[in-house]
Image (cartoon, rainbow, N blue to C red):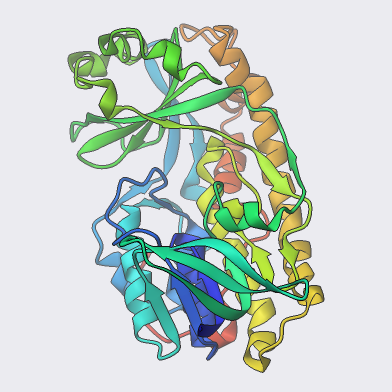
Length: 415
């Protein structure tokens, strides 16, 4: 049987960051990624200031700066025919006063290239973790299946599930979880963007659905909020109706209401909000969405998962070098990361109830401020409050810094 010290299921941001950090600690690590490469249509293309600082600490800042990307410095909302700013990142503490918008495949390729420079790092593409190996009540590795249909097993001192909200390893572990109702799902699609249009993040409260316009340079990545479970019913309508409500609020998009020509261009995200009550078994640890599935509200899920990975690397590297990780070591990771997870999910539940739920019910008036959500009314009236949502979204709670063993000297990516 194949073997490694640490087997990580999932080559997303959390899995790749964790794999790189552990390899730099001298730990033999194998990352399993079910796809053939990273070139696919991700939804989360944000790189937060804490991740930019991490890349600098790892000596990768200059390489990241060479990747074409845009910078998000504010959040604006169309109100009464004008754009009102509700979030301002320009006053953030630290080196970076923006969120970098970069295709996620570029970030993952950068991490993969850095990992390949470490002698103890292995990335196996086309390899999906499907189940857990167990012996005497302890998880001892994973079963996997390749894209060609071959099956095999890898023994590991520690298995870490970073394979997302639909994690096969989380399901196999049977760990108890808490789950909260979510009133919406999300449609994702693209429309063209013109160079003179806002460079900001633009939430739009339309007549039928709230929308979020995310600047991707040559196009807008659009998130349309729909009632939970309404996807099949709404798809029976002509796709031409999709963007008409947006143009009523954002007139500069009126010439692109027919840019989505088929429902095949509209992808569904089944939104979940849950959290494992215990993140580990003996020999297994869940991180990121595998431990706590996040709502897309605030766009903080990737940042939280990366911070999980940094904390886990720092807390577990020494035990992994010794070849034996105790359950108590794994419990320390959850204790470290649980407060930030709870705070973020509490904030998301509040926004579900006070903002997105009423918006789906048509109880907000986009022509004036009288019926806008209270948080939006406050930040309009007191501009200094714009720094608070900017901080919570861009830096989050309890940011983690790279452990000393993973740091490398190198030029920073700049401010």
